[in-house]
Length: 369
Image (cartoon, rainbow, N blue to C red; front, side, top):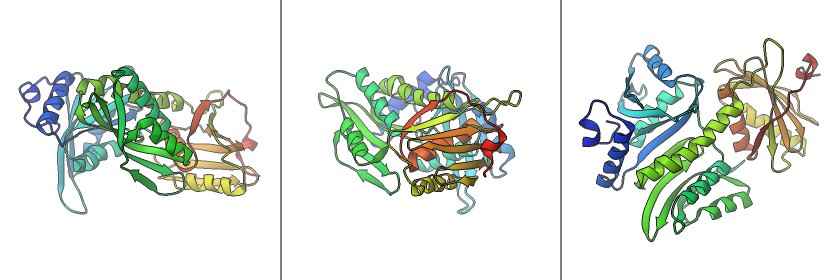
């Protein structure tokens, strides 16, 4: 079950629970010291279980079977890869983090199933489900919080980090160093941290070895299962919930016409020339499954973005050298707005996102002149 082998903690009971899964993970990692358990956190705007079950009506040569275990769901996947004709099989557990829109799936099957089985189920459930979209600042804060939860004598050491510039390829570093140094070097170089592998050590004993990424993927490779679930994962998913709250119910009111803006405030002056506005247009044009219309690009930028997933749309304005305002239309889904903000983070600069006060607009504000 879930790729965790024949652990008695799972196989001996028909009413498998999350507590048994945790014990099963602990046994699995002790018996397979070079293996990892994969986790994928997502933001669900609608019940993900309904979306998973619906996939059976969409794909003839794939099946997604769901079993309710009370505090989590078991999802069994069998999928034929068209290009190769091979079949991917496996299962994952998925559970909701209490009082949030965030769900986490886990499996000990290999990376092939994680990408083409579990990952396929998640991707085909969009836009009802969104990717996680953390920032490197979020990742640093997660490790700050985790460091406060472990022993004062503990040291958190990064063994591998992937950092990207906003306009160039990524760079993988295998240099072993304290985690604050990794993030500081990335900021100083104009980069952002996309993922990292770290160890929490206390007196040369591994308390936890894990991976965290910006896209909701975490892995547990060694150490305390309780530390991972109760501290690292809980702190990590809190950022997904903050994003969900920020981008939910921001559509223009059909009853009153009231508009809610989303303001992206960059730390640095990103827009100082027409070329910078063109970089924004390029970033939005590269957004998958969407199209853009450019109304103005000099001296300021005004772009309209249409999402092919669910018909959502919004207007994007550059209002000064550090500020973008996103104005959702009558249909502006959470998934759509989260994808736009993440694209801007990756291609331009990481930033803080804040809601501005409501403003009144007329039709002329959204039509190019």
